[in-house]
Length: 337
Ligand code: TXA
Ligand code: MG
Image 1 (cartoon, rainbow, N blue to C red):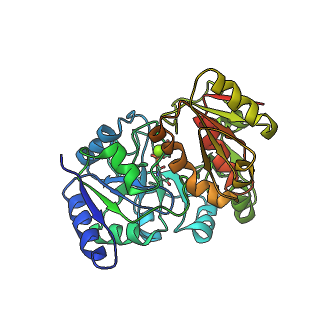
Image 2: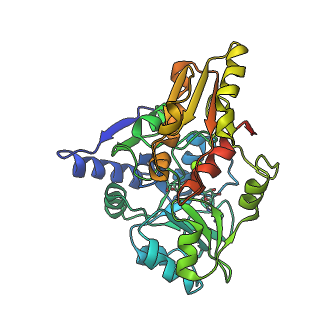
């Protein structure tokens, strides 16, 4: 299949968004930007279209997809009653990088929810995504537009790396703003529960609704990273990654790996970069926001320079840093002092 590369710029934006909307209405798969990462979209009411997403990604079919809608009203068309705190969360954070898991009313195709009685649904905060959703007038099921298990794409080039020839088109809106996927919150019980960390932090949610739980899979990952409870490997870079908790050990570990004859990459903050020597050094910026934005591009970048192993330092868990560290801990082949 030929994959159309539809660039959204001043002249062609509306035209290319229309083309993408028409492809979605015809049951094709189209990648599009959101504020978090690029999504791999298909009509959420069309089972055959949704099947194409699973095929293109190589995604296990028991892992449900997030449905994207343009408005609160459209969101309410796919769910049954929900606790009152959901309206408070919507008011505070949507459109934005947060996904609500709510009881489904069965209007989306069964493969979207992997047969579950709940549906994950969100309103993305991205003009192109919103115009696309309004144009096609459909709920759009969209996981991140990467091959299953790889880092999520934060630019159209990343999407094409994984999906060229497998999908109808990619709508190219440039690099995404946030850089890590939305916060997923289970809103089916009396107290909301975070299933996946993201830009909207635990503290942000607590401020709005009083209390919030963390899913046991996240807690386990914090207390004993590499816990075998994780069902799927995630965010794995093509090059093995060692996450180093103690910054003082960085150079030692780099040198030990160089002595083995390996080409060693380093993933560090700007201020650490000055004190480090490696075959390739990639910096993730100076604050948590910049780190989130650059993270997945950085993870993808080592392959091009034939790096054998990446040594990565641990970063601050403040704000979105919580989600960045969560992703790195899941991406790491090893975590060490
Ligand atoms: O930022 C994002 O959320 C991006 C953009 C494209 O919107 N999407 C994304 O989708 O990251 P994906 O498929 O890569 O991750 C969706 C996560 C998975 O961990 C999935 O298990 C969970 O959301 N999820 C979806 N529906 C669910 C449900 N009904 N119950 C529990 N978890 C659900
Ligand atoms: Mg994903």
